[in-house]
Length: 130
Image 1 (cartoon, rainbow, N blue to C red):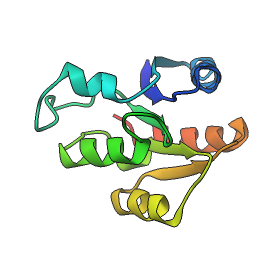
Image 2: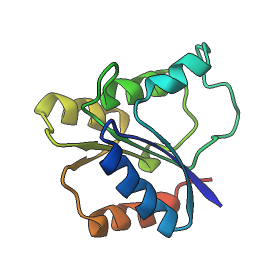
Image 3: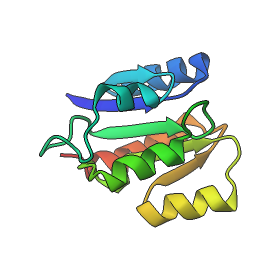
Image 4: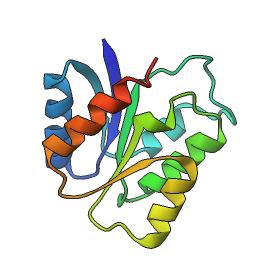
């Protein structure tokens, strides 16, 4: 079964995204902020040779750490998940956020985003996942 890691500080949005992915036969690990993972490992590099998750989807505007900072951090640590399998959701996509996401190959969706649009991305992304 495919596995996804998702972050959103809005519990309702997180629940909707989790349900959407679950209906698409994806096992979901859902969290209100990405810093929960930062506390679990102090590694300077991605600790595994194989990805733990097939997909990562993160909201951008969150307290403590925003989504683009999270993606840049895991990218710099050698995250093994293909960039095609990472998506950033944001209610406010600035040129700076778009530029930073593009630099590391992260797909950006502006909120609200329909499940039809996410579903098309999901179908394509899963072709890249291990």
